[in-house]
Image (cartoon, rainbow, N blue to C red; front, side, top):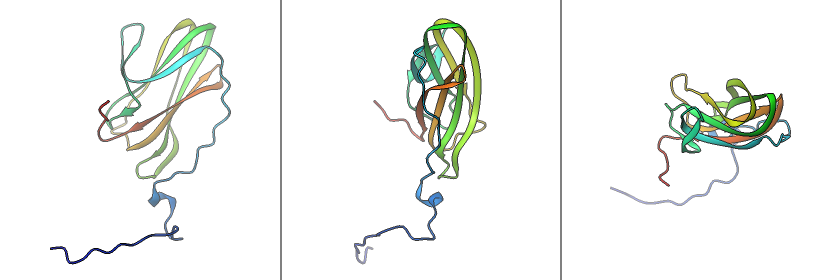
Length: 155
């Protein structure tokens, strides 16, 4: 049975408590974005459908065992434009995994269409924050953020 309740307040962060224990990774250093004008949008999705690679189940939340799809909608790109997606763990695993590259792939496209960039979990993704940087002809164009959660929010 409950004997008593005490109220208390914690002020400041003790010197012995490192960032690994308070859930924070240092901010990632990224280069400035220079939009090419050829990316209409980046859509995070559970999967794609058909040769058009239409995104299905758009989401910013993924489960630990799911493959992540970053669908890049391209409009009027010059011939042989190179699009590269670089996936990063930003802050995951109880802050034990900070700002680590987890996958990278490149595709070439002329004109308009969707590109489907994916990264699959090696076993399971750690819970936390992730991002994908999209480069066009070697220049950072767009960044999309997503999270890995134990249960998806119902919208």
